[in-house]
Length: 489
Image 1 (cartoon, helix red, strand yellow):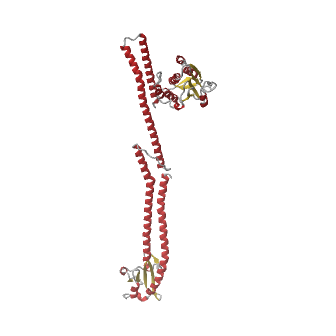
Image 2 (image 1 turned 90 degrees about the horizontal axis):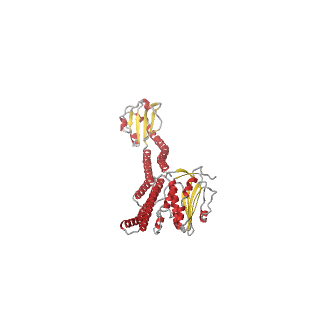
Image 3 (image 1 turned 180 degrees about the vertical axis):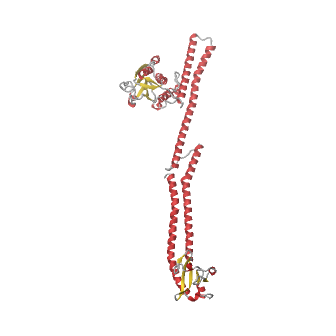
């Protein structure tokens, strides 16, 4: 139940229940009063009959006489007043009435022969006749002590019950509010405090109400923060590792450059051929350092959340023809056979410079991992009518091309291949650089595939690698077409 509904229901119960109880207690007292009235009226009528038989004596209504029978009849529960026909008090069992002024004639004749019920007494008044002449009046006051005592006792009893019920409701509501709100809010506050201190918190089942939703939001937030901290910690470790690795990789060629430069400067006995070789080594190592720093700068730039890559519209056939060209000399230098092709139509939004970097990175890796006499393929395709028949069989079985919405850049090479356990790691920064550090002919930084992946993701595309050991590797890059343009003809 929602807290709002629970509070409204509690308030309604707290307001209505005392009213219902008060009504029931009032009805109970009223029923008791009505029952007592009948009994008292019957008893008062019976007692009044005995009193009337004494007070109906005409001799009692004379001036200055003794009235022992009346004195005997009067008591604390029975007050008797005798009047003359003119309204003077002849006798009063209560001394207060003895000092009363004469009663007016209208008051004297009012409510005769009527047993009137008051809160504390029954009153009765009647004239006394001698023949047809009125000789006086008597008025009787019967106390209702039993009724008053009973009503008083029940009033206090009812008041006690009402107070007890009110206190019970107060304690119950206080307990429920404390259990429903205070305890849970205090627990949530303690969990937040523990989380702020970096302590581990144990998630508990959340109720289906506002506090439960707040608690669940807190758990979700804490999990997200833990995940973000883990990512930041991992990125920090990766950065530290990268700095250490890059520093090491820069130190090696820098040491070589320094050694060869000092030899050129100090050793005067070097032949012209040795000097030329030393200069070539210096240039080669300098180019390697330049490539490493360029890759590091590009990787750092792509990692920045504020970096926005600029795109331009290009003609597909013209740009992708240029993209796959000019790798022949590199392959010839290593004795590798190159197969290049481009069949792309339509318009595309991309960053030409970054896409050229993608092609360079992929071709550099393919050429580096292909043995002399091997083959390398590079193709750009957007037409379903042009299906590459040179793809490895495991690529054809696992990958489905969607030419209607995408253009593909494919780089494939035969050779040693990559084991399945390592394919997912090839996009990690410096992964290949670690393995290549033991290779004397290595010219990579280990950032190429990671940079390639980020560039393609910035373009709204993706990259996948397929490989089998002792057979070869195929890399497929997918880029989206501009909507409505470049459709299959």
